[in-house]
Length: 324
Length: 249
View 1: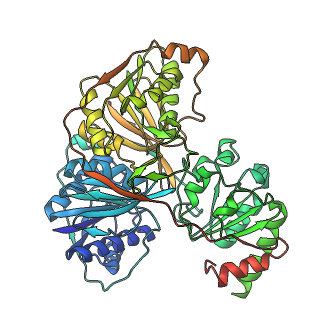
View 2: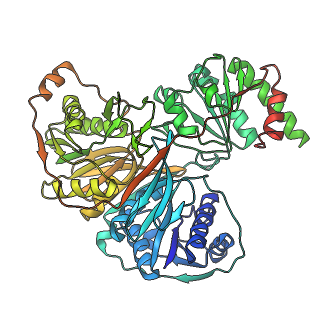
View 3: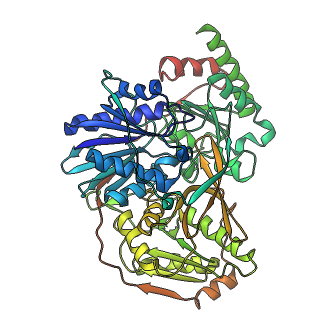
């Protein structure tokens, strides 16, 4: 028996979410009294791989193959399943991000492993195996029981945190069995956004809504985000109107995020918007309407015109930064 | 070419979420049921593709696993413009159960493109589309924000963390779509609603299959403490609170 965590890499590097996944896997391995194996697919150097050991991985399995430079769902899920079988892993853990959502269902069928997506806590028991997830897009939680022997979980980002341990990891490589059938999709072109903090990685997010009145008024949002090392986001009407790209849309049908600080400027806080941001550790709302529902979800509220409040906030942050 | 859209019947996104039976079941009392928002976008895009295909795309079908109560949602999909509908007559137990039912019902039907939403807005499983692909041993492309048909080829845009990719895929395949594939969901016209009554809605009985997971109980997030109001003239105070009290700066 063992626990298997899959983490992707971004141009050969791991991220906080990788370490969070490993930490979470370590927690389950300890609960079940077993070892933790982490699998990495693609080109990652030994030093970077070794870092996964800092969070409790006993063994790190690397799979390198020139055909695996892009995510190919069939091939990747096949590799993860092969490693799970070889290592006798009964619990497989992935992120609940795009990649995890792409792979977990296929791995679930291959291993006949009951899948719980978007778990946000340690299992409350491992026999029977019961774990909590978010449902109704963050409006509720559910405890889900997995009845199959094999189990697969995808972890909601920023829901567990990072826990360092003594590094005892060893690195092994694995040669998967792949066929042409695993490569029936082909990546033709890749576009990467550079020089911006990614919304899903960001510790701080500055978000604008309809109250910003138009795309020409986004300067202060971007300036504040720049000062705080934050990502920028927006509400659905803003992306629907084309004021901002749809990648920035946070909410029920957009991105679900859980930063440490979410600053909502000119966002009224429709229930669908709150569903996407309510897991934020701290929410600041700036809105001129004191009855806006965003104030019910917020920790700190400012009733005022965003056009006036934001520049003042920028000045106050500048002052704070110069003093700290 | 034939396209199939997997439809999930979900509570309206403005529904106040409550539970009954000792928090063991979702309270469906007074709930308005809708087509899962992503599935609605998928259907809209499939119809756009069909209309622009010069007859190459011959059919857009919809399928759902659900009891009789799910039929109005399928009728709405027909009213929006789907050509026919299939309802698998079973309560959806979990993603594996639903995917197994859909895979069994369509394996010999010759669909070239099967589209599912990236998740359903109720149980947020994000699983059915990928599971169908695996059960049918066909490729899937996930987090798709654009689908185009160019001649016999399907070209897709996939969102990745921090960017996007353009992909080609062999057919048949499953596209798992998210926001972006269509701008606005199509709304049924009066004529569409009239025509929907005449369109075929086939009911098939479920196959024997298991579910791998079950819901034990539900809870609502703890109530939030009251919002602390800060004077709009004193942003220094806000920064100070974020630093010393919330400890997020």
